[in-house]
Amino acid sequence: MPYKVDRVDVWRGIIADSPGELGKVLETLRAAGARLEFLFARPWKTGEAVFFLAPLQGAAQYRAAKSAGIVKWKDMPSLRVRGANKAGLAAKIAGAIGEAGINIHGLAAMGVGKNSMFYVALNKAAIAKAQRVVKQAL
Image (cartoon, rainbow, N blue to C red; front, side, top):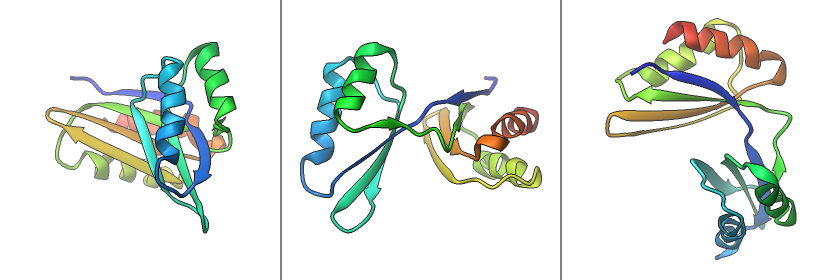
């Protein structure tokens, strides 16, 4: 299975760090037809939590995101790497990016059975170069 390395838009929101808040936001997106493949949430500042998600597509989902205070994370674009789940894949991806002199600002990955998916957040100036080096490494 060949690997796909795509640039993707990741969206960011900040909510109260209280029970049910993330669920409310996600219900708003679900009602607008969002089918998320990536979601990462964690405590942020005192009383707040931050979350990142992708993808959002179309006017209805964009309106729902705006109404929930979710914005496109323009300062830190991401690569999505999809393909076979192989031992050492994370090391290969992170190593290739590091050897190219690019700092990784965030990385989330999951392997399920024979498949894997990575979201790698990078600096805007480095995204094209990172995409090239990851494609070459894989």
